[in-house]
Amino acid sequence: MSGLAIGIVVLNVVLALLFSLGAAPILVWIERRVAGLIQDRLGPNRCHIAGVRLGGLVQSLADMLKLFFKEDFRANAIREKFLFSFAPVIVFVSAFLSFMVMPFADDIYVGSERFIMQGLPIDLGVLWFLALAGLSVYGIMIGGWASRNKYALLGAMRSGAQVISYEAAMGLSLISVLLCYPSVQLGDIVRAQGELLGGVLPAWGIFLQPLAALIFIVTAFAEANRTPFDLAEGESEIVGGFHTEYGAMRFGLFFVGEYVAMSASSALIVTLFFGGFQLPYLDTQTLHVKMPLILGALVFLVPLGSFSFIRWMRKHNRWRVQNDPRSRESAWLTKVIVGLNVVFLLGAGYGLIVGLSSFSTQFVTALLQVATFAFKLLAMNFVFVWVRWTLPRFRYDQLQMLGWKVLMPLALVNIVVTASVIVLKGA
Amino acid sequence: MNDLLFFLLSFFALFGAFGMIVLHQPVHSALSLIVTLLALAGLFALLNASFLFAVQIIVYAGAILTLFIFIIMFLNVKESNLPKEPNKTLYLFLGGIVLIPLNLLVLRAFYAMPLLREPLAEDFGEIQPLGAALFTKWLLPFELISLLLLVALIGAVVFARKDEV
Image (tube, rainbow over all chains, first blue to last red; front, side):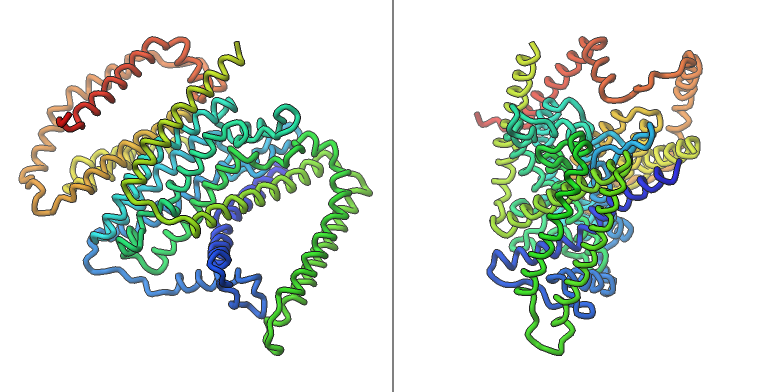
C-alpha cells in the first residue's frame, strides 16, 4: 500500500468515528437547544472553556465529564453482575458498528486501486444495518432483565416486542427500495440516485418510493427507541424503563448508544431516500469535470458566507458582563473563522493556479460530498429531535396496531406495486 | 490468521452450545445459544458466504432468539420454580457416550465427501449469484420450501387464535 492509500484508509476511519462517536455530543446539544427553541426558552448556553461557549456545545462536554466521574453505583439486589454491565456495551457497540457501512463519498481511485469511502470496506450494506439493529435490542432486554426490577423488566419487554414488530415492517419497506435500485450495496444505491428523473427531479428514493420512505422513517423512529415510540423508557408510567437501575458511565453508554443509533438511522434514511452524498444535479462525473469552475465559485461564496455569519454572530452572540471571559468569545471566533478562510483561499488558489491533478480533483470532490452528507445527516437528525419535542407518546396497543395493521400491509402492497411496475417496464 | 479465527469461532460455537445444555437458568441458556449462532455466522463469513452471514444474524440471532428470550423473560420463572436436576452431570456424560457412534458416522460421511479442488468463482457466496442460482437452478425446491413456511405460518395463526368465532 502506498502512502496515499494508507492516508485514505485513515481518513475513512477518522470520518466514521467523527460521524458516529463525535456526533453524540453534537446531537445532545442539538436536542437541548431545539427543545429550548420549541418550548420558547434558551436551553443550556453558559458553560464555557476560557470563554468559548460555541452556543452551548461545551455543555455536552461538561455532561460527559459528569457521567464519567459519577459514583459507579449498583444495587445489591442485582445478581447478574456480568450481564448488568455487559448490556450497555451491546447497545453501544451495535449502534457504533451499524454506522460503519454508510458511504460518506463516492469511491476514490488511486491508480487502479478502488477505495470505498466508508468505515469498514464491506459490501453488505442494508443487510449489515438490519443485522445490527436486531442485535442492539438484546442490550435493552438483558439490561432490563438483569436489573431485577419490575419497571425495568416492563421496559425491556416493551422494547423487545416493539423492535420485533417494527423490524418486520422495516425489512418489507426496504425490499421495494432494493427492487428500485437493484443492489444491497449502499454505494450503488447512492450512485443510482445521482441520476435525474425526467430531467427535472433528482432520482432520490423519496421521489421514487414515497410510501417506502414514510414507512421506513416511522419504523426507524421505533427502532431507535425515540419518541413517539419511546415506551421502553416511558417515564410517566414505568420510571426510567430499562435503565431505571443504571447510573454513571453504564447509563452513559446507553445514552450515547441511543444517540449513535439515532444518527445511524438518519444516515441510512439519508442514504436510501435523500441521495446520500450526492449534491442534487451534480453527480460525481460532473463534479470531476467542472471542478475548477466549482472551486472558483467557492472562492467567492465561502468568504461571503463567513462574512455574513460573522456579522450575525457579532450582533447576537453577546455577553453583558464586561470582564467575563465569555464577552470576548465573538472576537476570538471571528479570528478563527478569518484564519480558516485564509487557509481555504490559499489552498483553493494554489489548486486553481497550478492546476488540479486527477487525485486532488477526486479528493476535493470527496470533501464536497462528505460535507453534503454531513449536512443531510444533521438535517435528518434535526427531524428526529423536532418530532421528539412535538409529538406525544403512543399508547402501547396503538403502537402495535400501527405496526402490524397499518405499516406492514402498506409495505406489502408497496412491494407488489413496485414489482409489477418494474416487470411491466422491463417487458 | 484465518486458522486462528476459525479456532476462536469454533471454540465459541462449541462453548455456547455446551453452555446452553449445562446452564440452569433458561435465560442463560438462550443467551448462550446466541453466542453459538453468532460464532456460526462468523464461520460463514470466513467461508466467504457473506449473504449467509447476514441472514444468520438477522433471522436467527436477531429475530428468532429475540422471541425466545422475550417469551422466557415474559414468563419470568422464579428460581424456586425451576425443575431440580439432580443427576444432570451423570446424564450428560452417559448421553455423550451414547452419541459417540452417531458422531463417528458423521465423521466418516464427512471424510467420504469428495474434496473440492478447483478454485471457486470470484463472486462465490455473494448475494447476486446466490439469488440467480435459487431462482433458476433450484426454483422448485425453493417454492416448495416457501409453501411449507406458509403452511406453518397459517398453522401458527390458527392455533393462536381464540375459539370464540
